[in-house]
Length: 159
Length: 287
Image (cartoon, rainbow over all chains, first blue to last red; front, side, top):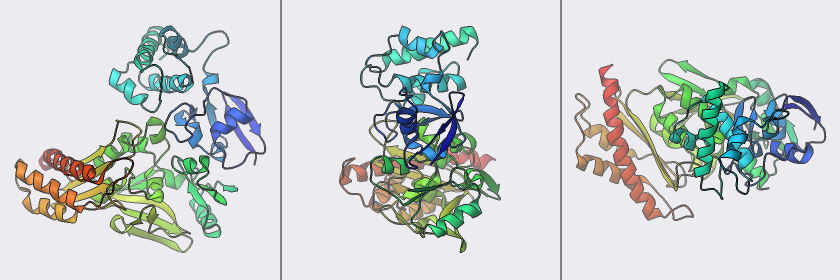
């Protein structure tokens, strides 16, 4: 099966797709985009979070054929040519990264949150990131990173 | 494996008739887990996510006709006023990522006794609208669940929509789990009070082979509520309601909890739900 979709702004045509494979498999194994991580394969951990047509989803729970014609945004599409996305920079500066495995998913979910809500309360942050598991940090630094990113985006008027 | 992605309902029904063993997929939050873990290898995958008719909702008199694929996220934001019980249930589903994909049609398709939407649908007396090339039919939600993961749906049928009466009284939904997100219910309970018909509807999740209704508890509440003036409920009445709901459950011991724990929590959440829903019923009284 052939799949045509847009990934991070670029039109991609991928051949020989098995219809039952996930979007996550397509991204990682067929397109060489390893940012979305493969962990639970059942939507529990959020490590594979990406946007499809602007909607935050787990790439492991989307069948490849379902994204025909869709616009997909992965963590690889966030940074500019020379600068990280403000959310990525905030995760670094706040020390919110330990082993780093959950980080891409958390960053994508944080971008999703701050796009909709530029000044979230702690409860709103916890609710928005509840689908992303981290086994290292205990989440305190992650919450710091989200608050830092929100404050910086507010200042630059980008949110 | 064949993969079909119809864009019209007529095409979807034709495909399902030609391939009755095809597994329907929309949000994928259940189906993809089965595929990823090799638990299912269907010959055919029938993707319904591009069928517009299945992914919208409309008003029809006193009811909402909810397309099978309308996501939980949309139910939360667009239908919380008309369907408060189902919106509360939707909030408890998985995580944002799951709620952005999953919908009630898939919940009904899986027909798990733990499905989060089921108690809310049972409480409101919803109707499941299904269709095939042979024609359409509507199934009373109380006759929909047959056995664990088995429903009244025929192999050539597709779930089109669910007709749910708009709230005419307070509604509540409670779910017991180990944390606030990403939880399969240990048990759950839905309640809907109808001020107009003076009836109380219930739904019990994850405490029996199918989602269940607490018929005696419903009758007890309906005959003891002060429908005229909405007087506050005595603790004894709430406790009796909780006991009757608990008695209607048929739980087992499993990995998520024991039968005894489920019976106990049901009696607690049922009593609380009635108290809260009765209080919010006053808002319907004044309008």
